[in-house]
Image (cartoon, rainbow, N blue to C red; front, side):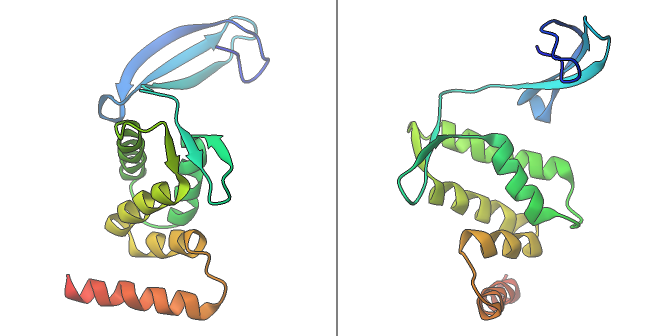
Length: 154
């Protein structure tokens, strides 16, 4: 594993332990070049996944990109980071076990929307504002109204 500090190619694993309910392995490493310590995570990847954008472009599935968009939606909200990580793992698992190697970006967005709806209504609305491409304040108002109505029914 390449050192993030000095780019030396070799590092030694000092400690390994499961994390995320066994979905990943957390490894503490020490660079053999500069001696710096850093943490890596290994996750099971069942197959190479490609995301198909609405304009037809294709790009490899990137869990970190998905995590960033969810983190932006959840910023400054009282949401346990472990719950967010479980949501991301569940979405990734669902995509990988679908049997398809290509998945529409809209399908992934819908999965995130469903997951955030259960976690936090503000994060759900924030994500929806980008996913549904809100262009004016009325779009927020209308969507928030549907969320509020759904909350009253449930």
